[in-house]
Image (cartoon, rainbow, N blue to C red; front, side, top):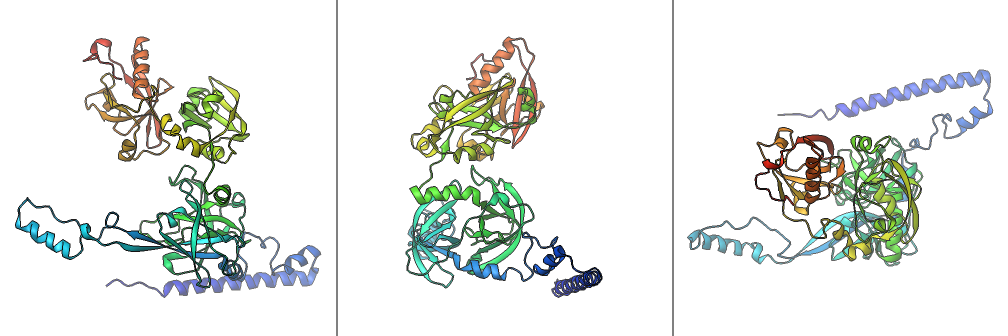
Length: 537
């Protein structure tokens, strides 16, 4: 039988504490000896008077000697538990396995049908109430406003906010936003409330202490502490990912709860964890306050978001792409497509442009642009800088509204083929030994393509063709042909035909495989080798 030496860790830990205490006592004895001989100069005197620590150690980023008790006592009343209920009908609940399938008329069919009906199988499952738990925090005590995650209250029929003193209050939804996973609730002012304020998440550095408070596993107000482990994490949760990572224990039920700095300011909203086991393994993620604040303000004011919209589809600029375009380094957002009728088209932005600056802010990497644009006020005219044909160009664009564009179907229009029609069936390219298709939602799911994936996807590879010899495989995305953007199978056909007409013996493809880009040169067959002579479009 395996045994766990549970007592070794406390004993070892206690020994460390004693050694640390002895070392600190010896250090202070040395300080006292020095000060008794030299006297205490004013600077040293003030340092000793401050929490009994030298000034070099008295840092706001370090936990106080008495721990986090005072901080937790002050903040706990502002943190709430959130309980939601949802009616599960026979359409959205699953009580057990499906009934086995038997040949028509089989005696087993009648037996099992009777068994499933008696046990309440799926077809006869009565509606039931499902309950889930999460966390939140009060941001405006006078208005009764509570912030939480959208996924905590999504599809809920009834939302109950549970205060720190176990008072239960029914809440209503003020607004929600799925893209950032944020929601604002309102509760009636029947009880005294305590609120907390937002801090500046941009000031948080890796290694700074943080405190998380929430409702893990429904246990109620629970305080955990840790540090900021990393910044600007992209976990593919949404288009504006910019998470703070922490090793403070965050578990199921912590979602929607606040992450505080040592000044008691909310610098993050705990949202997700990375865990193979389902429990905390020290990798938690929080929405930074600077990303959340403008969204929450819009939800409070309008009940929905009003994001800026540019009307472009973009992709990352790799070192290879930067070199081919004459850029000094990989930076900016490469425009793969421009939405017809959008702000970018009106401003003169073209496919192949690299957006380097937007509204005076540098676009150091592709994923920064959507957030900058989204945070810009709609109908505002801003300056932007693009890289086009080896030099910078200054343009002006009037920012549109993302939600209005979605309602008008303009975003879907931007995903259509260049002739205005929806993507057609896969096209066969005998010259390359490939079958290609525009990126569709089904292919996105099938090949696990990211939301920012742009180009033409390989759906089939001829085993005896040149592409197979070069290692091309289904799921790869052709981003460029002859160092020019590939936006559709028709686009690829035109560029391949142009290369062949120019007498080139091969065509250079830029392949994107799960974010790993590489160039592949494929040999071209002569015109007479095109077996069926059909236009691959």
